[in-house]
Length: 97
Image 1 (spheres, rainbow, N blue to C red):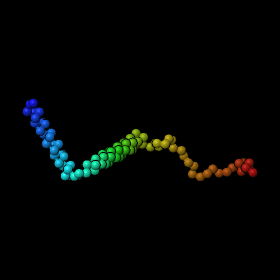
Image 2 (spheres, rainbow, N blue to C red):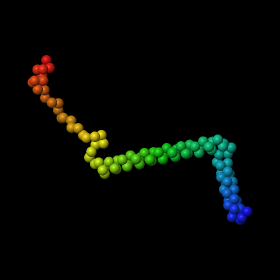
Image 3 (cartoon, rainbow, N blue to C red):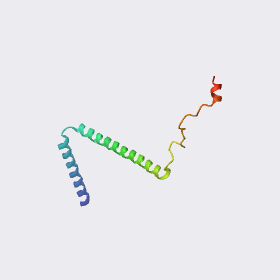
Image 4 (spheres, helix red, strand yellow):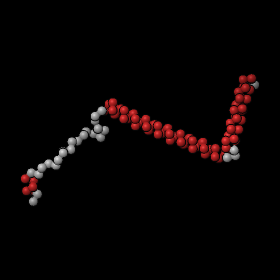
């Protein structure tokens, strides 16, 4: 066994011992709580990442629409709506009777 292997093994064992001591001080004998806390942290991080990605997609869509499309509506060609209803003609009024 070379000296390099021994040194790396010693450093790894020291880091494992420190992690175990830190976990024992933070959580005591509640090992189940530790796994739940880690899972909740990962779930929260996943929600935050998803929210950031959604906001990025909405922002990109808005910017690309402004740059490329400008005035066109995303729902198709705009239809003009008459300001007042058409006036009733005498022929249509007499045929309705």
